[in-house]
Image 1 (cartoon, rainbow, N blue to C red):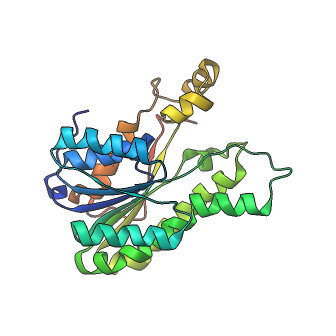
Image 2 (image 1 turned 45 degrees about the horizontal axis):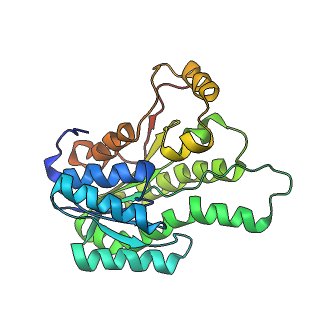
Length: 253
């Protein structure tokens, strides 16, 4: 995809969680095409390395991939330190990794709840903590990826919806506390993006038809639609935007 050019993003270091597939892979490609130095973590090595190969051909330089389970905070922060040592100070942080596993309320255990929150919310705080020394010195943009499932109150995955609601509160707190250092924090809130995972597990023709009926815009949402908004929030074009939620859901109600 051809992205608008944000010249201030060139040569900045970007760290992305969950960059190996879906929306995260689109982030990796979009920022690399801006000339940014992109590092990302993901669990699955083979698709991540394939992504690096594809992006290198497209952008002319290779992203840095570090295999990491983001529930392991020490490993996650070690990946950020590796990024810093190879690419320089982290100026843009995108907390994207998430797992929208469906579950019922009955029988959902404490360990399952903790695992969900440890994937979908906890890392967002600790990546910010690790990036702060760089961002306090150089300023920066934090982009947390939420979900309109929290706005709509969708059923079937209460732990995920809870985490995505928490991301909005966390981001507002970060924006207020870190603003004096020139650090901005915003939330991207996608609607139903038809990634390969969604198509494989849940995107039946009937479900897509129902979603489009609720959208003002009658086309499905792509990963690139979300990446375009991330580029804007990372760039100086949004220099006075912080503590905000940018909803990309085709006007779904």
